[in-house]
Length: 249
Ligand code: NDP
Ligand code: 8X3
Image 1: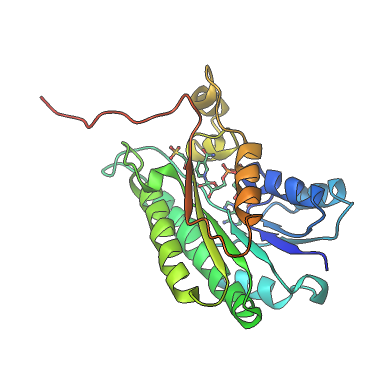
Image 2: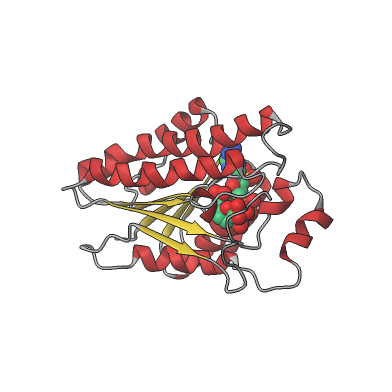
């Protein structure tokens, strides 16, 4: 039987690249996002496999519940859930950051991921199979100025992923947290509220990770033998490494 992957945040970046890669391997897809026009375009592009598209805001619990209750029968056995939808907003220090930005990151990166996981997991538990792949970040492990709430939301994803593994122990269900570093997507355009010049300066002058690099990492994690669980993968472009601890002299 054709396998099914549900990808949140499939209209762009990692999610879209993951949709294309799994379609190339003949998976059927459930693709989610807020931009209906993009979902329709991707559905047309991937006409070689069945694609169910769903437009909703993952940070709104009712919308996620409505989506899950209306998954068509043909797509209802979900083998992989990729909790990818997320964003950073702003890079201001904690005394100046916009509280609405903080709330949106919490509602999306944390609450949205929890709604989706909580609503999809029972079906996986019933079938005693499945794989939940969360998209964390290096920002969940390493602090940087202005990373405040974004980094903390990804630290939540890392610890939730570990705790989730404990909850599903003995069922055969797998849980993976993928933690990318600098990757060129629409992430910075979103972070800087559409300031394309500032966004492109983040990526200029070096070779960043691509969305395809992350899609391939997701595919690799998912295609390990059933007895292998990749707990987490931290992945950076070669040009990125760590800075020294700061000392105020
Ligand atoms: P993009 O901005 O290119 O993609 C983000 C995706 O999330 C879009 O498809 C967007 O869809 C979706 N999304 C955002 N908010 C919502 C919402 N409220 N409801 C539903 N969907 C939503 O960025 P990336 O591909 O880079 O980001 C994907 C994930 O990877 C995020 O969780 C991000 O934090 C993480 N990440 C990114 C890194 C990078 O450097 N790029 C590094 C490490 C982690 P739409 O707007 O249509 O709703
Ligand atoms: C995205 C990577 O370093 O911009 O999660 O926070 S970073």
